[in-house]
Amino acid sequence: MAAAQDFKPRILGFLCNWCSYAGADLCGVSRYQYPPSLKIIRVMCSGRVDLEFVLRALARGNDGVFIGGCWLGECHYDTEGNYDALSMMHLGKKLLEHVGLNPERLRLESVSASQGGRFAEVVTDFTGKLRELGPVGTGEGMDQKTLALKLQAITKVIPYVRLVEREKLRVRFPSKAEYEEFFASDQLKSLFKELIADKLAVSQIMVLLQDRALSTGEIAHSLGMSPSEVSKHLNSSARQRLVRFDETEKRYALA
Amino acid sequence: MDTERTSNMSEISLQIDGRQVAATKDMTVLEAARSAGIAIPTVCHNDKLKPFGGCRLCIVEAESGGRTTLVSACTYTVQKDLVVRTRSKQIDGTRKMMTEMLLAHAPESEVLQELAREYQADKDSFERQASFCILCGLCVRYCAEIKQKKAVAFVNRGHNREISFVPDIAAKECWDCKECFQLCPTSALQAAYVLMRSLTSIKTESGEQSGMHSVPEQDA
Image 1 (cartoon, rainbow over the protein chains, first blue to last red):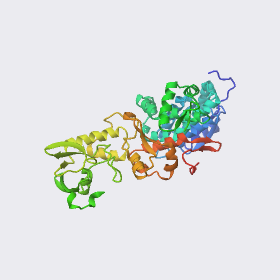
Image 2: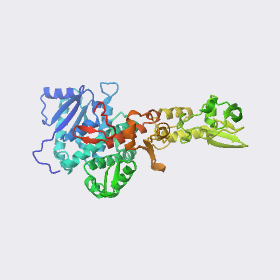
Image 3: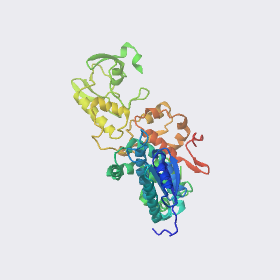
Image 4: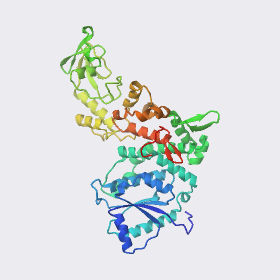
């Protein structure tokens, strides 16, 4: 990634009130040094962080999103929101990766209230990583318009993704390694492909068609998909009357 | 239903689980059984709707003229001297299998979990399916038969079959109705609705404006 030397990443951090926020506080009090790249929003629990927050943060020009929560098993609530946050993070990474954004822009770390030093380390490391990756969008070779389109397309399907998550992907494992394993499994890959990937592709096409009617080739070119794939999605969307084929213009338009 | 009709002409007597049950000639086995207080499990059946025979859970043994066949009680009309058995080893086995196949789609569905307890069905005996619609058609039929709007329909065929809202009709009709939502044994219907609504929403200067309805949501 050919990022400019003077690139300063912007990170938005969501910190749990009980662990990470207190950890960040301790970090300051103990005078540990870390790059001034992080803006912090305090939440009562890392489980409060929704996928939509992450996407909005990226759409507003943040280069990375950081979520700080308690260590597993140490959530201060009976509902144990940090496990939900972990699931959300993995799902978010999948979605970002699917539209061509680097999943490493989203990071979740456990930092307890006593780990001021660790907080500084984590932020320094994340900032360094983002400096390598470059600015959001540009680092992935997308222009600003494409980036906005991709993020808007994901945001659109988030309410649906929440339902899918509740019905099909709600898991709870005792360790982080098991979450990694589950989210890298073939079972999850096929579920993701059949339930989310296709809808996400349709969503991108619908966002693209908002501006004007386009041909299959033009859509394929703009979204970096193959024309046959686009054609498949257009056919199914036309059947569901989401899009229509404009006979006179020979282009697809929103229905 | 026609259970109260007492025209002597059309009275038919049949045997269900060893009991004599009186029925009228256009009743189904399911209606006759329920009128006599005999329970037969169903998923796709709704008293307000026409019989569909989609879920096959109401399967029973029907014996007439010395031949026994497995039939779906909700679509099979009563006959004179029909002998019906609602539980047997074969029936329980079939229902167990049906429940397991449905559970592969919707393991969290309460209706199915209850059936699973009754028939000792294992929700993991089949590979998990991606789609969580069990194609009971309750929403589609309710919208077509009761509301007569056809805002939700089946699309595609075979294993690609799924339910889908028709955007231009749903935009006008669904916002104030949503009566079909409570019929859905899974959350597939809700997911289909949410997906269609968010896909058809248009981004405006002041934020997301849904194309589905003219009234903005409370949180918009």
